[in-house]
Image (cartoon, rainbow, N blue to C red):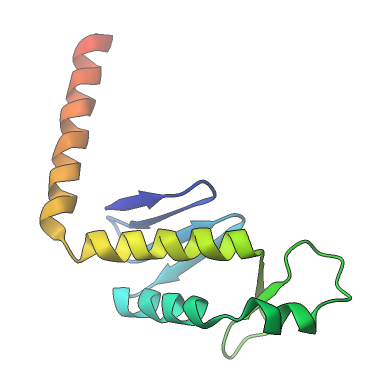
Length: 121
């Protein structure tokens, strides 16, 4: 299963079975949908004004700081990036909760791939 947005993608790796998130120049792995849901829950509670007030002197166009627990790493995002990332995660979790739909999409992709092989050969 794979979900795409303009700046990112979420997919389950066939080899390691982890959920991989790529967004901008960020890459993260999640052991479970529950861990991904935790990130989504946090993103949904982010108050842009709170974080923007903390970094008003920062010249960066990305004013929203998303800290990672037990780490000095912080993700810097704009309002639009927060919205896009949230929608990407929501769509992925929604589709993963409905495996029949995901299987149907995979079948459609296989048919399209077979059609491409026929047309190209």
